[in-house]
Length: 196
Image (tube, rainbow, N blue to C red):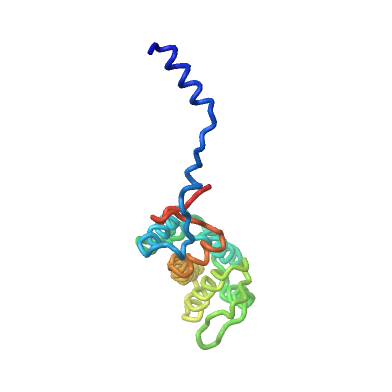
């Protein structure tokens, strides 16, 4: 057979419609709840690496807002939501009279007199991390700390512990299943997320 006949047959074969289904049509897709334990773990690990902490921006806004109500600012930060390495926040806070600090603190919401924990007013941004930061600040204030940088450090420590706990909860199997269902995510059998 000469080269011209072979080429003509290849062109004809390509022109004929092929009964080929796309790869996605032949792959069986699973909901997160239908995956094996090892595939669920893989799905969670992949999402954790790609998504991180769902509420990171809102949480940072809480710290910025708290420093702002005391006429200061959050200058810089480095947060490890997983708590596997140290985290830090640097504040630039002014000097302020104790009476003024106390007056501002009173305006940040009601709290339990025994525990000094807020009642969930979230006056800063409306996000729950507001309360965690304010609680740390309030406890340090009632312990006699008056330096605003130290008060913000206490706020940061309380806020960080709560955010890291929230992050860990986000990636429990139960919470992740809710997130996957709400977003209608589907997976291949091995736990890899399917992207249509």
